Amino acid sequence: MEYVEEFLDYLVYQKNYSEHTKINYEEDLNDYFSFLKKESLDYKTIEYSDIRFYLMYLKEEKKEKNSSINRHLSSLRSFYKYLLNKKIVKNNVFLYLNGPKKEKKLPRYFEYQELEELFLIPDTHSATGQRDLLILELLYATGIRVAELVSIRLKDIHLQDRTILILGKGNKERMVPYGEYAADILDKYLHQGREELNIHKTDFLLLNHRGEPLTDRGVRYILDQIIKKTSLQKHISPHMLRHTFATHLLNEGCDLLSVQKLLGHESIQATQIYTHVTTEKLKDVYYHSFPRAKMNKNTKN
Figure 1 (cartoon, rainbow, N blue to C red):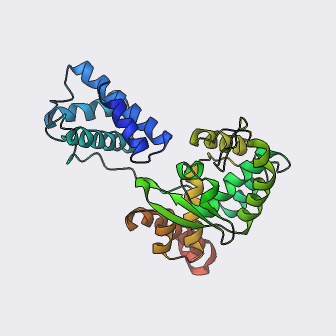
Figure 2: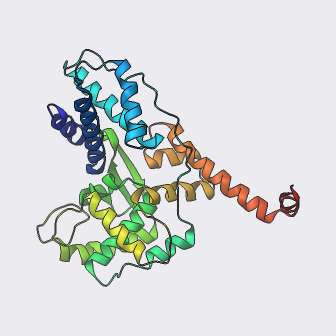
């Protein structure tokens, strides 16, 4: 569709969005234009009153969850903002539209012993095994996003002070530290595994078996293969390791503002969801450990 490809390129090359995010936007826009075609509506002249039928279409025909509907609306809000700046449309009809209330869902994360099981899976005698363990260690040690991970180049890594310069959303830079475990496997991978994989002499840190820079989709596939070899009955994703990083920091007493800066969140509100996770953890420990809390809980009703 006209302007959609331009918009998607704008997200990747100017807004620094990941390939995964681009695919989500593309799917949302394809759904939207399918609806417009079905209803004989023009995207340039669609009115606010038409949108309620679009919401009904998503809810009743597509059976989308509230969180997915809100994602669709966010995608369209951004798309129409782009069209408005290009003077393709006269107004952004999605600008002030409120979607359905999100289902309250706490971030899922790994317990310490579950992480240990994950870290034992990669075979560090092979080049790809060293790379796979490095992926796990860096995602957990830094809390970076998968798009930030695959964008790391050798020049971004400061080995002496164990920090990495990360290019985040909106091309904003931040420095993230990493610990001893990540440093050990990074050193091994740089001097062994990466030397074997780097047949094209690229400066990207993470490479696939063909010597090309690893993609975010490639990282997700690697994590899927790792979890299958464990006894863990959990789905794994790069973002789940990011959630784990933040949750474990707060559990160990790190302040919220520091966690916000490490995660690269623009707003403290985005980081506050992790305080709910730690509060639930504390409540669970309290009810299972404090004698009178246990007694009161067991004798209720």
